[in-house]
Image (cartoon, rainbow, N blue to C red):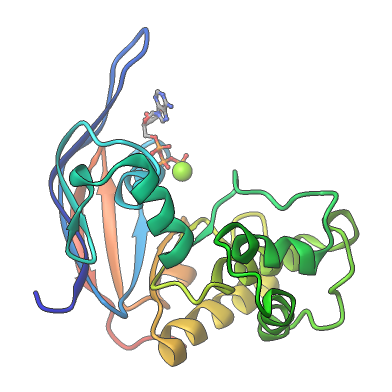
Length: 232
Ligand SMILES: Nc1ncnc2c1ncn2[C@@H]1O[C@H](COP(=O)(O)OP(=O)(O)OP(=O)(O)O)[C@@H](O)[C@H]1O
Ligand SMILES: [Mg+2]
């Protein structure tokens, strides 16, 4: 347990509305520092909800979540926001790129928001270089392809050198070639830089490249297994 960076115990999540939805029904989970974990399962089974609850983006209803040894229930909203800004990167669809900013401006934004203005532009350029977009600094999202936009999103997620990267279907909507390219980048970041990576995917070929796969069904983890020979 020494290196465990993400933990959940009897985690439940209800969405309260006209109809109450019991989206997570007792999730127990422990992820070690430096692991790359894929989450799979049918639409509506709770994958996005799980990412939101583990990263502190959404409140949990019952149970416990720990991040880096800290009980999320004991942190204020501000503390959770700060923790995300400093230690986490997100590749989420609703965290879209800002259309009026260029690629490099989009990528440097998390640094500016975290008050790390020094060298922000240089770091943003370096992150874009890493995802192979050194020639597209000044392009706005509308002048980039879908795969390039997704790579800008990854650059933005890694620019802070976060401990944990959360990705919700990072290769969704991409063709096989672009999808492989995105996975090459994520795997490299995990292997070389040691970022802990949790990614949701519907594709077996994507999940197989992670070290471990969780299969969810109706709000619980049904299967949790290490992947054999990693197809890298
Ligand atoms: N804000 C919300 N209010 C009420 N119910 C919600 C809300 N968000 C999600 N749900 C419900 O909770 C369940 C889990 O949703 P979630 O988005 O986690 O699924 P998912 O596994 O990510 O699905 P997909 O693969 O389609 O993205 C679904 O039944 C969904 O309808
Ligand atoms: Mg989802």
